Every structure is written in C-alpha cells, then in structure tokens.
Amino acid sequence: MRTPHKRPLAKEIMVQEDEGVRRWKTCLHEAGHAVAGRHLLKRATGAAVFGNGSGVANLGNGADVPVSFREAMAAAAGEAAESLADKYAPPEVPLPVPLETAYPEIAGP
Image (cartoon, rainbow, N blue to C red; front, side, top):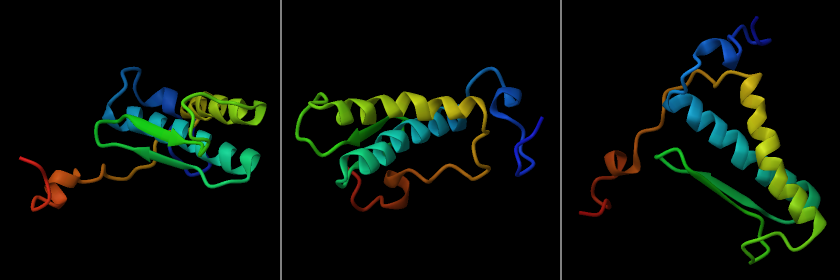
C-alpha cells in the first residue's frame, strides 16, 4: 500500500526505527502542539526539533503545565499528531547538516 504521493506507508518501511523515522515522529509531535496551540489558544506558539531528534513546544503560557482546558488539548495534540507516522512515511529529504558543521566558527569548544 502507498500514500497518494506513491511513497510506502511508514509501517511498511522498517519495523526498527531509524534516525529519519524518529525525527519524523518528533516533527509531527511538536507540530501537533504548535498547530493546535495556535488554533485553540489564538496566540503565537513555537516548536523546535533538535539535531539529536528531541523536540520542544512552547504554548506561550509561561507555565510548565497546561492551566486551561484549551491548553490541555494543545498539549494532548502532540501525541495525536505523532500517530500520523503510522500512516504516512517520512518525506524523502536528506537530514539537515548539524549546526556545528554548518557554522563551525560559532560552535563551542
């Protein structure tokens, strides 16, 4: 079975997750927080995925935990969006160059 773009479904690629699949899941997860936050909270939210495959989202409330129902929904949206990785394969693009490689002049020792 393939996606509309003729790519194999994620579950058909490999059972063992490689770096690209882990990064894809993280991207979907953090985007889920950011998009739901923007829609539900009507304020700017942010998300980032780091070179090591971890990510972070900021709902812009200044707290570590949701303080309203809408914030809780935006927090839960990350896991829901990540589940899309079971249906859609990662895009076929090369992984980005680490910042330390791209900008060695500003990299720490």
